[in-house]
Amino acid sequence: MKNTTKDWLSAAQDDIKSMSLLLKNPDLTNIVAFHAQQAIEKSLKALMEESEIEFIKTHNLKTLLASTNTNLNINKRVFTELDQLYLDSRYPGDIGLMPFGKPSMEDAQQYLDEAKKIYQEIEKRISTLKKDI
Image (tube, rainbow, N blue to C red; front, side):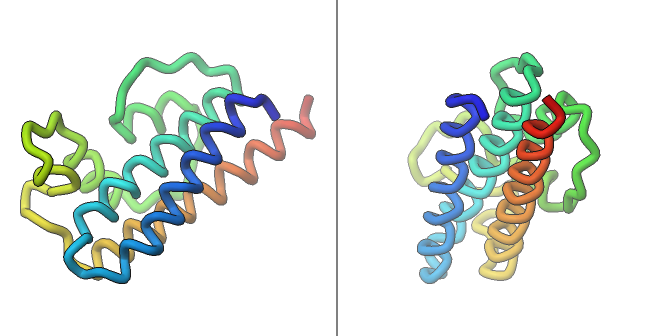
């Protein structure tokens, strides 16, 4: 595995660990959402790096997923919601806010679950890529 791929996966894992801790506080669901978006983005970029797929600098999960040419089992609602939050925030309080406001605890848990699932699936695919070489 390439060192850059490892770095992307490590950074994604840090976001997942952070979400698990943050989810204990119902006031921080917006920050959980932000880290979920980041974890999924970094996981996708790890797959692209290892697969030698050039990617443009974007935070859009759907664009990154399409660039991987991989059929991942994703929760489309979660992807759509997380893509809505990564806007150019003008104020610190906007980080992780959806157009409908702060996510519920249930939504935050779903974001964490989806980020973990995507990370694990991508990690598995990357290990398969290694064997194919």
